[in-house]
Image 1 (cartoon, rainbow over the protein chains, first blue to last red):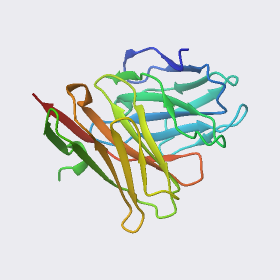
Image 2 (spheres, helix red, strand yellow):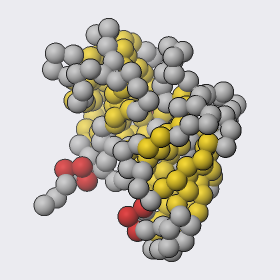
Image 3 (cartoon, one colour):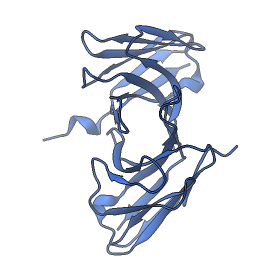
Image 4 (tube, helix red, strand yellow):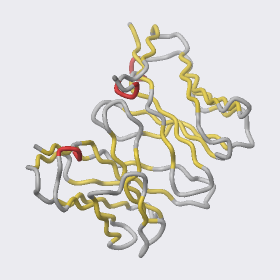
Length: 114
Length: 111
């Protein structure tokens, strides 16, 4: 049982380049999330998808777009990368309303924008 | 000026001692709280959770205490082991989709 799988694990971009971070979960969870983690700070929500077919902005959505491709997959796209987007990105999923509300996280993507 | 968030609070404990990690949460209406452990280069890993209708919950070697009066959450780790060395952070949820995460505390276990 893989849980939440993110690719790639590491990426280096030049300013202005674009890329897509991929995330897939095999736990049949309805909700999926993208967070960023910066040194010494708490995780901050970029975008989330409460269910297949819906997406909503989180705390720090500027410069990002997302796609909920199906129930399993939720991708994050940087259209024109900026140095301020250097961070570690985590995808997470959960199944609200089940009494087991916790977030399950992937192993992260470390992104550097030069 | 320097941002407080750049430097994580650090707790150093002797192997075998008990550890207590504290967290102040922000929203008095939050109803669900989680503690996560994050090892270097890895994603956050669930440790234990608690709902607002409880004051205490115990797991294997871990206990979470919730004090709603002062909006305080603590994680107690019994008989701390070297494998417990990590960053620990709390998260709160208010009946919604988003969780608010604390910056974390770095636990170092001394031999």
